[in-house]
Length: 436
Ligand SMILES: Cc1ncc(COP(=O)(O)O)c(C=O)c1O
Image 1: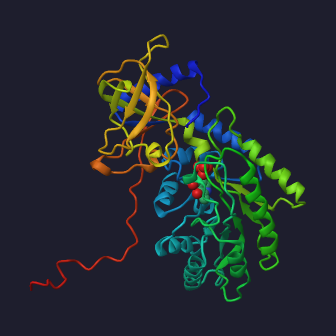
Image 2: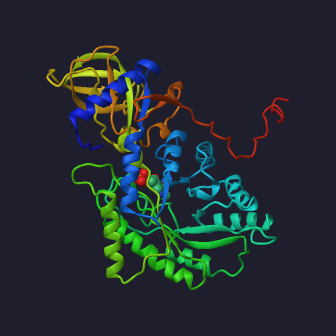
Image 3: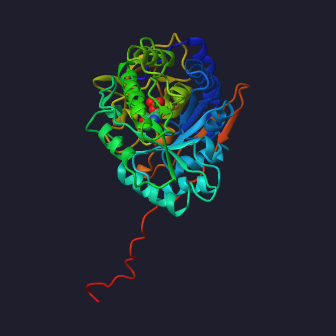
């Protein structure tokens, strides 16, 4: 469920700009409210005050306009691919404020990271997932002579798999021991104690992330304590180790959901119990919390009819290709009709997407009578929506719009996604045909 703190007056104000966006740019259209993003960022900044580093995880929404708004507040960018990195660059985030993580980095992406140090503008850090990745990066760093000839080394964190089961949907829990995410402590210590590494990489510390949309603070704090303890062990081998990046995971604001300050306080209390000091450099890298409730997907009704057991069934012009979360995780996003008044009669309504899959459904909602052409707003669509589209059924990426505090709407652009780093397959034309 995407819980919302309801506020009728705000909803009415929001409806005005959502309708305007649909009229001006057509549907489906994503709309992001800059003021709500800024307010959520301010809350995280207050919960984790400087000198905490704030890295925005672009995977939640890599729209350069969003990244640039956060960068102007002093946020760095946390990216998982050269595609996200180009959004950060389009938003003028300097490479020195970019952190790079990601479960499967290509040789080209590792080389791109090395190049930043070769140009004297090294990434803030790169988080390593495995020994194989570390070896490849080390090889590239040696070849570029990082750490020699006046060139800086590239700072790396080692991603810890904290072996915890966080309080969230199974699909969003990445900290379990058998997951593909991060290294176990033994793998990290064997990497750190290895003597054969060159000077091109400098071990700065530990990266940990237990999962997203956390319903409680316990697993987050427990993983944080493990990361800090491990940092102490690492620093016996690497004097440069002083950093823990505690990841993201804060859930959207809702009654009963822990707020960012509660995550900070739980970690502080757990470190105190364990008599562990705060690391010299601490970072968080949230995504969802900053943008989730700041975004809507505005869509038009294509059909409406009664269909048992529901009083009404509607098919929209937006669905799983624009908002995959219901099909992927069973998430429930609130849907509201933009033109309806509070007194209008409501019907139990099945809200469906236009894609040829029966899982393309937004579930049931209480909505007024709807007709073709009516506008609806899908809430909580600022995170993991526009950044998570697909072109299935030949569907294009919808338009994206920012609303600024003066009410103006800005049509936003994304950079093209860079090409894949794959060996070009031998062309069929050049291959010998069995029939000669
Ligand atoms: C390593 C890492 N950091 C940060 C995030 C951001 O999480 P959230 O959007 O829940 O804050 C994710 C999300 O998957 C992640 O995998």
